[in-house]
Image 1 (spheres, one colour):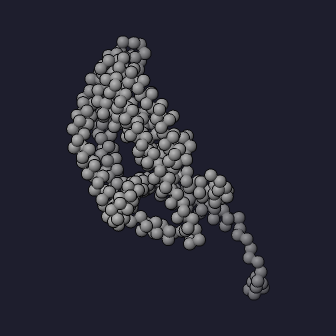
Image 2 (spheres, one colour):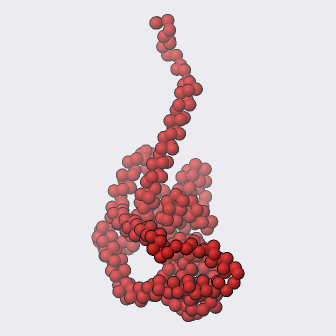
Image 3 (cartoon, helix red, strand yellow):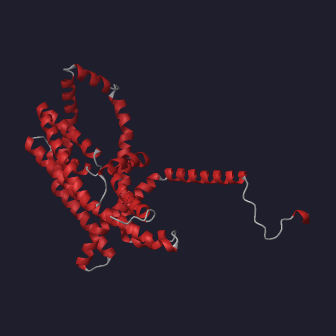
Length: 350
């Protein structure tokens, strides 16, 4: 047996072709398995990111409050949460009755509006073709049963939104605990750079939130003034819908125009035309003036990147992927800038 032993100090033979193939198969299987695991927990990931966005907002609101009162960060956060709760209660106390009445009237008007639109469409050949394409039939009980999953989705979405708020409060209460825990997974020599990247993402999200808030308020005010001026019913409710919808760029504001057009059409068709003109002017100003200026000032992000982000993140994470597509794109953009352009390409010019 000694004759067949390899001499000491000899160079080991390279792995065989079968061994290399098996190694590649195992690596590919591991990568695919990790992708499947991430796919299964995609809702957890997107809600966690939403909690991070909430935490960034709360921390940046609590910071000035803490410096003003000279209190600890946790006490400042507690004051901020309580103040925001008080503001929400005051808002609903003073405006809740009016907004509730308007939204209730909006829901009551929609069936009559749809009947009016159906009568008007029946007057033309093209209109009858459209109605034929949209007609689904079925009795009211069947339509009610078909609406139950949608209602369950709304309730589930509200629960998920509440969960994001709670997660955001926990993150904001002690962010260093979670950051330090993540740093333990990073090699020591890379930890300082990771800290810099996380700080850059936090600053970018802070600036984006501030710019987005101004954009939402501006769009809501313009919508209210325009709809009130031409006499469309429920201008306050329509302004709230338009302002909230701008959180989802391009798609949200376009969808928010549908109730306004239907309400205007319920009064008379010519008013719907005026409402469409108001929406066109308001959305043009928002898309080409206010939104680019505010977001360019807040965070340097190409406009087309927002639209592409919705097309990418919505299929991956569902409705929350579409809602959080812009802050996700901001975070990804900073990661690309810091970890690829600056670190890999070594191009640190801004």
